[in-house]
Amino acid sequence: MQIVQYGYTDTSTSSYEEDHFIPLELGGDPTSAQNLWPEPYAGSKTAGNKDTVETKLKKAVCAGTITLSQARTHIKSDWTTALADLGLS
Image (cartoon, rainbow, N blue to C red):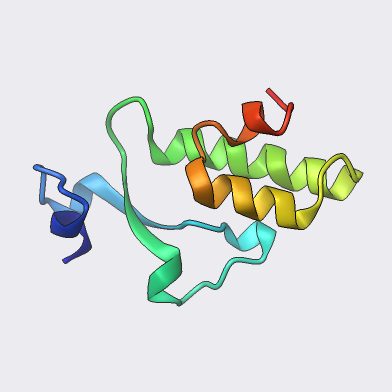
């Protein structure tokens, strides 16, 4: 179970959203196990926070501010710092 693999103490599946490391809006694979992880709904790094980052990255790619490759690399590396690392925060 992915929840246990990530070391989460709350093992209730209702506490998580199965999310994509590289979001679908940036061309992430929708079904690859390597692109899926249990994203917590609670805490400071939540599904809602990541959704905001995903949208900002998509808009920056569409505007030509960053490349698709940059967006994918940074969101997969550490989505919590992706915007700042790319100068988009």
